[in-house]
Length: 115
Image (tube, rainbow, N blue to C red; front, side):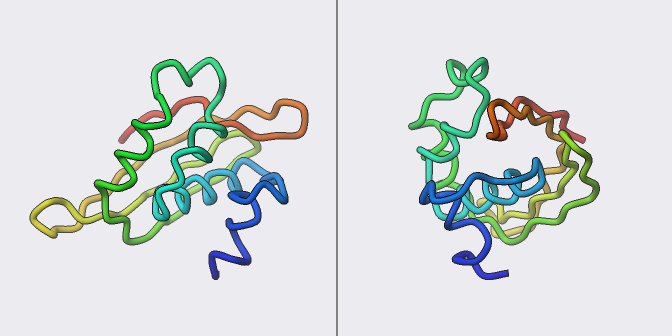
């Protein structure tokens, strides 16, 4: 799916992600394009103090993401595998089950469990 049809409208704030899975996909894309503001703004307010905007931006800029695979998605959870290149240009996988919260029509990332 092309960025402009998938996640760009969410990043530009012309639309809100309609589901937890859509938010997960848009957050992955935000890491790919290094949109620290979007990552910060879509993180649950209770978790923002631990993750300042510049930390998201630094993480995004220091990682070469390859692809996203959704393993399972429920109403407010998404299990995914995000593939990236390490410093030796070897493929590694971030495997997480993420929790999301719907608040006033907007989805927010709360936390996750790594596998």
